[in-house]
Length: 636
Image (cartoon, rainbow, N blue to C red; front, side, top):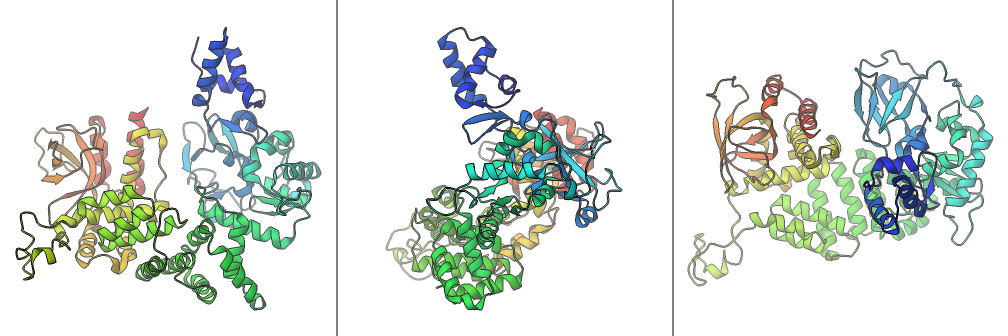
């Protein structure tokens, strides 16, 4: 009997949802299971095969096929003036169904033979290629459809009878009834212990699949974008949240603002109550002078909620100076800045203004008043403090802090740069550092830090770690289609952002005065480094790698580029071979050349293409596209 495949699951769900406990039996019938043992084997295989991008779990313990849910359904969106001017599309609530149900990371634009893939940002934003529909104007409509396993951007055709506004949206009354019915069934009542009647609130992103099951034909028949149809129903709405008539405007606004901040910061690992986030934000930003005592009480309640504070801290770190200054003033009025929650938020305002030293001081003060302890709820704060300590070069303090934050793996990583006392010296001998004190009173207890040559790799680690923490939004997300090469491409694109993208100098400015002076000067000198093509002349198990610069060589057997001997961790360089090639950046250090990040092995057939691309002085996007296409060609 055949093994269960994703196609078998698609086939049994092609006509609609099934209960989870019926799915295995349906697949068994399809495969002709002849015994109870066969059915048990199929049932055991089933959930290993289910692809969450193709099979969606519903709230009533049924599962549905994404293709069945979205088949033939077009998500229309009307372009505004900013979108047209910037050649960008932000589907927002209009694309909630297509973008909530196993959404891919890219959308296909154009006709076969000339199509491109646009990367999705946030909740359905992407840029349009210059050659596609160059005459788009404000008020024009575009749509998203499911095309196999991809999303495709389309324009309305002759058969698409769209209205110009919500006055002719379609069956708005039926849409309101469907949303209200789902809201009463699935919403959590905001009044504890009460059944949701008209006091309900519904997150459309969470409820998208269930609304499609309940009202698929109705939604497909709308003659305007979904957001315009929602507005025509008269229901309270903001972004992807709608609410019933029984919910007050104030309470809805608090919930919706909290939900919006959670959505914007995308902190899905420890999701706080949207009301908690909304109330904390209200307490920190409300201009109402008459409510000062009430606002102070609200702030004191939620400054101890680490999940809510984390969302607000993330949001604050991206605000303008005047906004962060107002929030900082309010915090200092309401709270003790040595409280962990208040210190975290104040540190975020300082980071937004570029004052990393002030942020460091705030977190240090909070740790002194409330010693870090694993499981105290503030692990994220202590991890941040550990990062600051590591950048400042205090390896032992960083390790202690990370262990307290429940991140021992980060602490272990610093062992290679931990100062160690000299060997072969007696405890009572004069200390070899020349201080005049006994060894036991000097470098045995407090070893001297490594010289700059020994800390060059530490400086490179700081650069990469800081960039991953604070510049991650500047580089594409992991491309999981590449399997084991996904990390290679991500790290290379991060270094392309720093070098070819010019962000290295910005990063040094962000680290500010935390860096030791000699490390700061060294990192500044790396700003001119660029990715190059190298031929592997020799490598050894002890980590020595001999490379010849092959960026400018011809096709002859005797390349003339400079030869470099670099120290490298050969673990990730799994495809290295003598006379093979790699693409990477080499940084000059007092201890010799140092590889930046993870070089990417270049197959022989791609050497000339990579060399030609480098000769054109590529930017960070060009390098990413080059390496991604090369890796994809060999992954598939």
